[in-house]
Length: 372
Ligand SMILES: Cc1cc2nc3c(=O)[nH]c(=O)nc-3n(C[C@H](O)[C@H](O)[C@H](O)COP(=O)(O)OP(=O)(O)OC[C@H]3O[C@@H](n4cnc5c(N)ncnc54)[C@H](O)[C@@H]3O)c2cc1C
Image 1 (cartoon, rainbow, N blue to C red):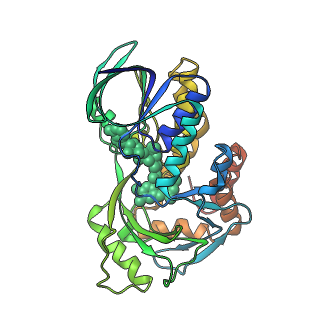
Image 2: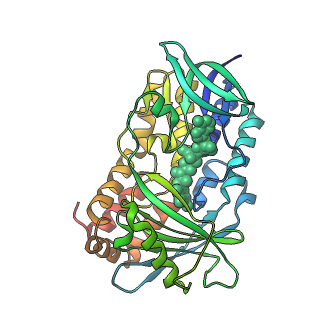
Image 3: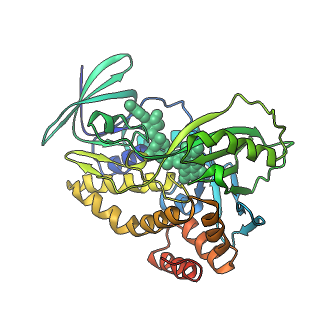
């Protein structure tokens, strides 16, 4: 059995669904192949309000609006940052991803349940892929393939590309009611058990996502236990909702390989330090789709670099210098006690329509505390 399309999109998460939506809106024939449409990716589901504006997303998917963050440094006292404008919209990933795929479908993209297996041939004008669709092995012939299949990308392994370096995470869902959580507050905890990352508490619709991210997977259990103890759970607290997953650590990657393009987690498009990935996956996919609409895959690299390279490099520098030990964490977080740094940092994070000016003003505010 054989299928033909101009662009085969592997993965129907934020990146894949967005690419399908943009391509189909311009009349480009595309198939989104999603292996697990009922699945819910382990994810905090926090999306800055600016992303809803940029992508004109329905606000009905927002389960909670967060307008305070609480930061706990390793040694010094915790502090809170209140947002003057804007909020983080908390979504449930199963519903959010499905709404994104519906939006792509409404523009005319074909959305199929099926798993990409491998690339059989990657020529100058076509890519031949093998997929399992409704129990049948199919050959899919496409002019381009867009890999949006996440951090464990099968497209990458099929092309023999290197594994994506990651932060390891271990998370759990906890009941919101009867526990000491606030529905409008995301909490971030920094200490040695979350080296290179942080522990978090994010409110959802009916529960709370709590977890730890670290470059050292052996520290995860201890980090999560410590977080739960801090929140008043007993040391022998048992749960059956524990889930581990990986978050890409951004590195400069090749985004285009012949007729194959990579966007989102499959290209490590997660902002270092904050580990925000949903918006950046969607933006990268949008750029990739725009490049394909122009018939110029190389344009994708240019669009991404122009818009995001400087920010990713800065955040990677901060991550490398400050998030790897408790002294560094204390130094950097102390800068965020300054209201100017707080508000400029928050604006940069939340308001996605802000241009280069907000990036420069954040860097200038931070310079007082950090040499880079
Ligand atoms: C614990 C945790 C918490 C996080 N919290 C946040 C947060 O609060 N905010 C935020 O912005 N980011 C967060 N992230 C990061 C965010 O989840 C990702 O960056 C984002 O989901 C990337 O989107 P994507 O479309 O590239 O990949 P994914 O969301 O991983 O989607 C990939 C899709 O491809 C499908 N797929 C995979 N293989 C195949 C195949 N062979 N064939 C067909 N389909 C396939 C999968 O089923 C999946 O639907 C978090 C990540 C983790 C692990």
